[in-house]
Length: 469
Image (cartoon, rainbow, N blue to C red):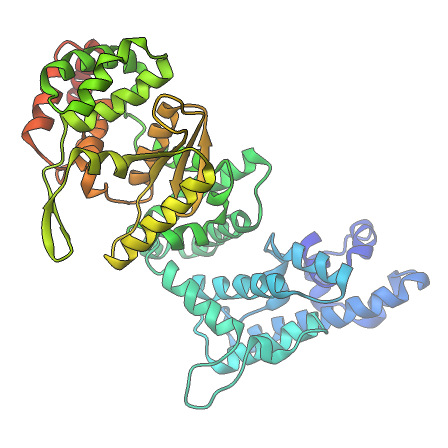
């Protein structure tokens, strides 16, 4: 009832209606005489404005009944049930106008309702909705929302937004499972997800509500990502990922999808000691041997980074890629710089990434998530970042960076960079205990996994538990 009154500009009458037990059903049949008899004279002006909107709402309801089509678009009722519509009316009440942001939001609410309820964007339908918009918001121009074009698709915000939302929505589990849901529940389920998705587009707090709505929309995002949507579009559709805490949402999705996976923190120290011993026997290149010589002299954080760099020498890439019309065998250095880069300043990091993105564009590939460190060398790192689709997430240490970077590949449905795919496959199998039928295989990978796992009590226990399940 409160949302309906806000929609019809009747907030001033909420207490009066409540005291007199005036329900939504009463408003459906209320006349001006009935309204004026219960409204104080000093509220006559607001009452006139309210009744104007009320008549539009009543007429829409009558049209539904007379046609027998229960999917008719009742604009006031749709807005009354949508949380986001309150923002539109508050802005309009304050500014007596709508700006491009709220016009788009209004069109999105209507378009999503149409897609969810299988209402096609026929010209008479859009024409009526556009008219209803100008009735509720008298400053608006009908042609902003609908333009009749003979023999062609309609113009205006309503059709373009309907088309965009319909494309994204058709692959979602809501539509896939629609036939298995009782008809009375379809609208409720779809509306809840649509409202939460809409809320996430425009809100970043309170954090507990963000996490709740993010969890509620997990399956929708999961199905959307399976359609091979580009990473750029993912961040545009879910702008909340661009916030500094966006990585926490990625972690939440990973936890939901891989609840039983291991966590590398549980075994990192043991792994580090045993890996360095193995690396001493396996590594031959001069640069890696120099790293090993000074390893014990370094601080713990530096050692952690050096271990990750050494892993690329133990797991050298075996693939070949095409460069300048020639096949080139990838090197250990190729693997490392596809995983992590460091530069003295953040500005230099950004400049380097722009150059790499341009090169990737020319080769028709994209830059995958990559760890970026501020420092002139691995021995003097001061800041840790993860770069994902033009967004920098900041962390306190290299291991947290590594953790979220790995989770990005799984949550965002991305492939490992070919240059360091062996490295990431090892991380996946050894630390997270995730095994895929399509994963990369190699002799060096199999040997390293075999050498490091047998004496690890935690991993053996995990293997037994997985087999038992």
